[in-house]
Length: 154
Image (tube, one colour):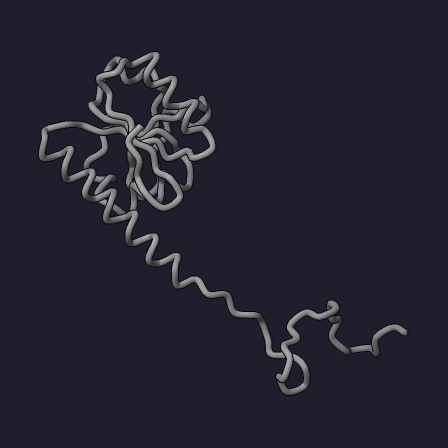
């Protein structure tokens, strides 16, 4: 019941589509058209936020030195307008974000160089981080969070 030497191995049902000649049609296609629309919408929201804060003479920091924060800083106007990127992981502090070259700092850096707003881009930790911001930095800091498809003021 083994395969013939030189014959390709096949996973049951892999690549098969009904009606395709020979029963296979190559890799299945996934519709990702909605992803581009979501990305554009988030970019527009972030850029509006940056423009509003900058227009009001306010400063902003990003909390979350991760792929999401790095990507936002590199692909929107955040990278040009953000003061620094906060992360509580000591091994990230003292380094720079790729592409935007924002400095990654400890949360206590806020006391050396306060900002008016902090954008949280660590979705799994949003509520925890918002609590830390309120407790350590006070209620005067505007707290925003990047959700899966929009920005939210907390």
